[in-house]
Image (cartoon, rainbow, N blue to C red; front, side, top):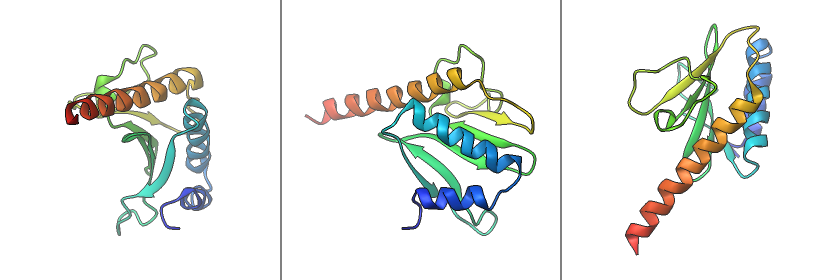
Length: 136
């Protein structure tokens, strides 16, 4: 089925350099942080035919983008998340999204990254709970 985990496997296989390895590592960390998170590839277009892996739990938590010289992990609600380990290093001026750019040789802080993913999930769950409460 298009957009499923198999598509992410294909994206990793189609990116055999360090960026594919980083995507695989990030994917593992994200699933460790939230075993209930879902994943699919979205936003396929001519400039990016393989698309971008999107991880969701009651809304988008994060997106991985393979770029020429880096791998970007963007958090959809990053501006609302606490980042005590100061992982965010890109897209810092926006009112919503924050990102972590990883370059060749970078080693992500797995503990802090798992905490950030969990915070993103908790933010989405709280938002869904608030909107559900208003509907009653």
